[in-house]
Image (cartoon, rainbow over all chains, first blue to last red; front, side, top):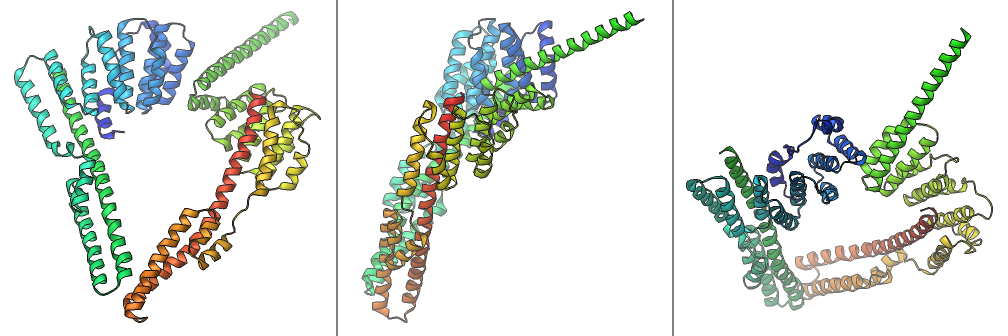
Length: 297
Length: 289
């Protein structure tokens, strides 16, 4: 789970309750659950919202209760459960703002549940079905999802359409692109790291794969170990210890050689993933700043 | 005066009955909601609400205990599930289900003696399905305890009369046969064999590939040590170092072979326990669900 991103997102998404139109009668139904939610007792609140859903015969109230329950579950970090609960409201055929909210929250929970592919597909449906509604939250979530999917070109195009939709300011657009390109160039090297290339380098030059993966220390250690075991083989063979040179010299060498190749591949994969996480966090912070700027202006 | 007193008494009784009826209605609605939560597999919420009903008594208390036990059983919290299920009283329609599942849960968590006592205390009518189930479950617990005499005492009465457990009765007899037929390797003998020929103890324990690898490793180390001895003699430091390392590996291999034999025994025991518990479980699901 991308907890760095989550931390940033909590401020934006989780603390904000959706703007759902409720009548005075609706408010009475939700009184107890809302009080529990307001007091921070999210688990009890989720039960009370479920009770409203269970007892009510109005499909609108049931959908609102479901959405409110999802808010409580989000506070508890139970995005998978929230996602499952939201599926119950897919059949709702009431007003568009509620249907938009259901689909939006569903996409959001998918994203938080590490299912960005599905979140992207849901966002496409959202845009298609509710393109006439204000979509600011949609733009931010879609940007986050694209960053998670590492679709950098699409994200650039999306940024352009997002900014031009809300702001007619070429200077801001250019500076945003500049910052975006800077973030990507900072991590350009890590994006090009490839597990197979690391393995190939270590196959021909011992230790080079580890150095390519960014771990110079491991590369030197592996190279030195292979040299030392080969030297031991040579010294023992030169002194007439032929059997010992085979088992105590060549034996360790083959372990270091093949182990080094595998190790280089693993290091490349681990380092790439951890740096990608840093990139995605940097990108999330950047996207949230863009969103905040657009909201202010 | 007497008349007005009687009227007041009737009105008060009426209010009390109405309040009681109202409370019962509220409780029934609450149970309906809890059942809804359980059906949605929202077990934590269901249990939370059931805990709140802990103060109720009578038939409702049985329902609360049964539901709590059942939810915990679904959550695989078997120890607590047994505790709740065994609180269900005999008057309850779910008494037998609760008792048998409670005993099964105890057997599953390794409390075999407690499971046996619970099963023995279930009041059953002769020639009934409950009696056959009690006998079958007791035979399973006896197998889990390695108590083959008790197993035979119960298993000799298996008659396949009840379809819900006929196949499992047969399976239970097969498990007993497998216990008899399977040779469990001795850790001591495995160690001795590996002392004679490195790796042979592991082959004896059924881990042939591990045995061959151990042999090859130790052979290579032995040959290396011999090479140092041949070149430098018994007093050369390189020979002493090599011989010490080989000796450590040799001793380690003996210990490893004993551990391998013990591990094989544990794996067999674990596999058999899972099979027995599985076969104890199926008739319960067939009979009570």
